[in-house]
Image (tube, rainbow, N blue to C red; front, side, top):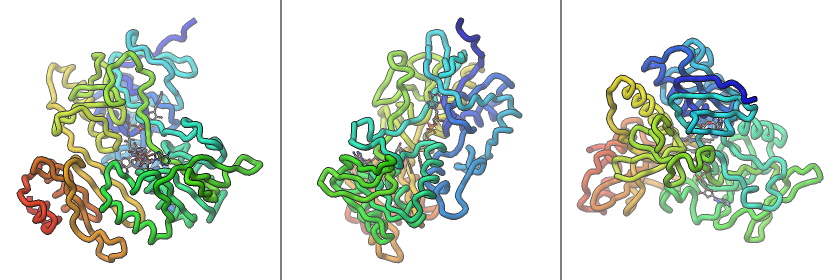
Length: 436
Ligand code: FDA
Ligand code: NAD
């Protein structure tokens, strides 16, 4: 006999960043006790995921829950589990949904529980790509670790304690690779990064930007191996990893391997039920999918990026927060016969490691114009890059900016000022942005 379903007016599927910001917005807009449930396979209330690759791994005063529940990451109120119970918002935790039937508006958990809804917000985020997915030999060995959620972070912390002062190989030169190699170095590990591209973070960095970070990391004692990949692993009799075999024949000793070779949006539950585009669930400017009453927010949504007049998927926290707020406002407005403006997002990415921090706004297309001092050995390093397309500045990157300077580069990316002379822009550097 099928289990009796629990019914909610609104269900948020997923309990990450977008879920936490959606809950806060429901709270702001007004939600009746019992109307909203958040169903998450994680055992804890929504938290600010970026903390996991930064404060969570600090050697001193490491961040721990409840310190970084949403919405502290954007300077907002910290929503503790009590906040949800006071509002009558149900947190259904440690519950993985394994089936979604949009026709009958029913979700089914791994334990066989059914949940029905009137409005569904899909906020399942991304999962990590694993080396076992490509059949890399030995990739199932112990201490080959990934980082997506608290459970992964705790495994890493335990391995760091067990292998104190040991050797770490970081596979991947993207966000995880750069943030985790710094975190492990700060914990006194011997760190080597390996990535296939000619420079780190190629999806955003130009060679001039990467020159600074690679030099800065080398000066901190991190070794960098470029242009090759991990082709296999050696392990001891206990199954613990001992070495990484590179495709170019080199072998690197390792007590811990951290892999960051990209993420994949979790959309499989909806295959054949929702329109997809660019690997995500296709939405309109209010995050409603091809099925009325079903919304997709955060990493899984491919939405109209109005400023560039194209559909895009964005895997960053600022969009996870803002898309959640937009969807909830649109849902509530629709109920009262009103409407909200279309989502008009300006892409914003950032990262921090050691004592350095960068921000990027806009689009990294067209010709790049590096400015400032990007010498990693310089005591006064401060630099950035503009991207110029069709005579207009469309993207800006800045390392080491003050709050005002970061606001200035955001303004430039939003207003897209014209530039007549690219050489003059290079010479003017950051001043161009602060004048706009
Ligand atoms: P998110 O991944 O936060 O949440 C998804 C939730 O859904 C999880 O709780 C998951 O368990 C749950 N779920 C999935 N499938 C389910 C199912 N079938 N049943 C039940 N629950 C299910 N970005 C940035 O801009 N700056 C930064 O510094 C960082 N740093 C950073 C560090 C690390 C370690 C990671 C992994 C990611 C970042 N990011 C980031 C990216 C950012 O965290 C990410 O874009 C947002 O968390 C996306 O929010 P979502 O809510 O879409 O997914
Ligand atoms: P990523 O896409 O940033 O980087 C993947 C990297 O993997 C590539 O740059 C490449 O160097 C490398 N790579 C690919 N195949 C490889 C192989 N076979 N061997 C070695 N290297 C290989 O992905 P990520 O760093 O894994 O991050 C995962 C997710 O977490 C992303 O959604 C990212 O946006 C998010 N994240 C964001 C931040 C931030 O915004 N500051 C921080 C951490 C994580």
